Image (cartoon, rainbow, N blue to C red; front, side, top):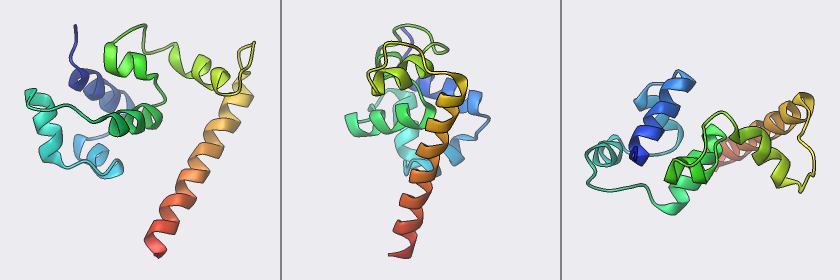
Length: 113
């Protein structure tokens, strides 16, 4: 089974980020990331949830490697609202934009404190 770190690294590369940028975005020290890579430690539960939300993947895939990377975001968004159908591309886009907006406002509020 592929280690959690390798799945995180896959997500970082797919997003076109550097590991440094990833660490800065999620407030992870590069030392912690290095420890994850070497298997000395693993991310805590709250950090795993944050990483899954940041990359829009399921915790099942991130933690256990279950399923495939590609099929998580649409069903994840539909499950949030108890939908019996898949959300349209426009609905998915709107929800992602709103989440990004809320995240921006939250981060802006932190910097003004």
